[in-house]
Image 1 (tube, rainbow, N blue to C red):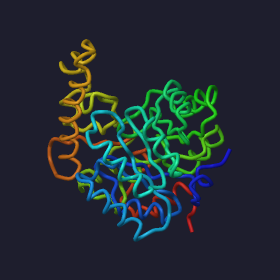
Image 2: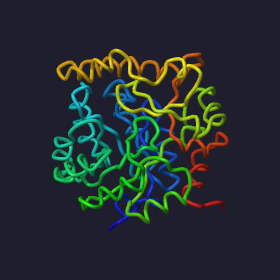
Image 3: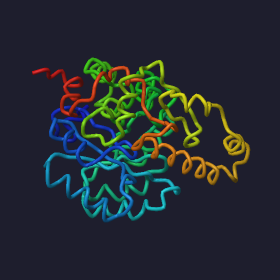
Length: 315
């Protein structure tokens, strides 16, 4: 099976993952110029004009392939317009999350746009394979932000047992040896996020970057309070004061199927506002997303320098 590097025609089988609020033009360009591929969430841009401008800005600075993450469920009221724009721009690939990618896949196929679908288990992997996805991004329990429930190697093994679709492993990657391990077990490449939070190109607050250096793997906790789904965050004093147990709204959400969609939207909107506030400003209400690979962060460096930890290029 071809590696991700062959599929995307890049030097290294690495995607610098699309991170909500954080991924930007500078990060994507730096990733591409370092021999990987970069991606960013469409929702990082409030308007379609801003999204189109970001794509044009990246293309003006690199000829390498890059992708856009698209939330494909009904909670994203901008979905259809964003998809239409990405089709018009003939983006290299789309990463789908949180919903059925069927319409996206069907629309992209005639244009040669690749579609990689986030999955957390075999059930979703089988569904998107049947729909014609080009690869799955297997989001494991080591991923930063929204994560899965299964460890990296078991998730790869489980998907391989019932699917033929290429697997991109997402979560827990901070060194080349870890990329080698997941690829030896059947992954074609990796999607990496957390360690790039501490890049010079990331425009998060100094407090956030300092916390990435100060805290370690043991300080990462799982909460559902921010979005209604599993989210890995740094266990700051503020997070400790909030607790990680289900709130009244969450308990109601799980009991009432009719209200579930609307309650989850309320929880998500409230949580994302809190995350956005603490991502870019100094505040006591600190909710900082990160995965266990925070353990590898020792300083703030240019993204191309961080890439060397993943490629073994120390020259």
